[in-house]
Each structure stands twice: as C-alpha cells, then as structure tokens.
Length: 77
Image (cartoon, rainbow, N blue to C red):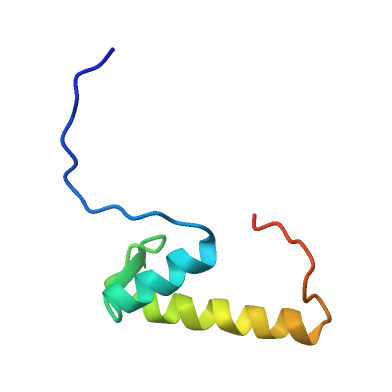
C-alpha cells in the first residue's frame, strides 16, 4: 500500500453536476474557470467564468423544460 498523503485542497460531498456548478459559481464567482488556448494569438484567447457556466447551465435547463423534457433522463457527453 502507498503512504498516506495529506490533502492539499478542500473537498466537500457532491451529489450531482448541478450542485458542483452552483457551488462553484457561489464560491468563485467571476474568477476564470477555463482559458481556451487553441489559438496561439493573445487576442484569440477565450475565457469563461464560474458564473457564466452557471448561467449557461440554467439556460440549457430552461430550454430542455420548454421542449417537454422535465423528468426525463439525459446523458452529458
């Protein structure tokens, strides 16, 4: 067996992806969540914040409800 390694970061129990996104937005707000570096030019870089991800998730959920998908199971790929 390996040696015990002390945690270097905070953890908390998660129940689903929605909880992860909501808590991330609450905790980190407008901090950068990711940086798209596919293009090498500095002006071509795109960022997204935790709040933007939350807003996109909520918009997707609203659109799915409008399509009659309430209570349906979906897969996120």
